[in-house]
Image (tube, rainbow, N blue to C red; front, side):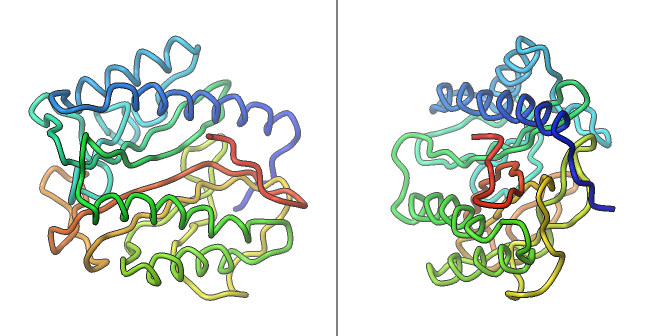
Length: 248
């Protein structure tokens, strides 16, 4: 069931969203060759706790980290590890959330580690811009398919592919709520968006094919062809006009 948030719930989601966005900015300061993804996880945990919030991902369905840290061909859900050390030329996707007063924020970014290839740079930029292309249509009375198709069209126009096996989601008291928010689809189809809905829109974009595989750890998702992947996500609030981005 899709929930419409009250004014007081929206205020709580703004607070959780701000902490999430600020935590990603804090992590970004530390993205460099030589740092492990476990160290980045600790930075996120400490920052979120300092804000009087809790990491949404920690122990969620048994996940062991405060962030998902997914370098290069990993798409999402990479487990932070002291053995995964960033090196010059890598790209790293960080997905994370914060819970405050019972409500969640959820956001993701992909960062370049030092100097990266032109393809990697383009992939990061296209993935981010595809989110903004999609949310142009995220308004009261529009259809969810309007958002999804705009993301897909922009990504494919730029020569990349949108992951099909993973989608965005509703968010609020629970980290994952209805509806599913695909990054592909058809204009004019799907759920009718309404003022007060909160959803996480999160394009996951591969440089090669859209097919993905899950690794033996039961969490990490990787591109099937080994191509690079990027991720960009924000929690948004549907309004009568332009949507409000809660995690920027």
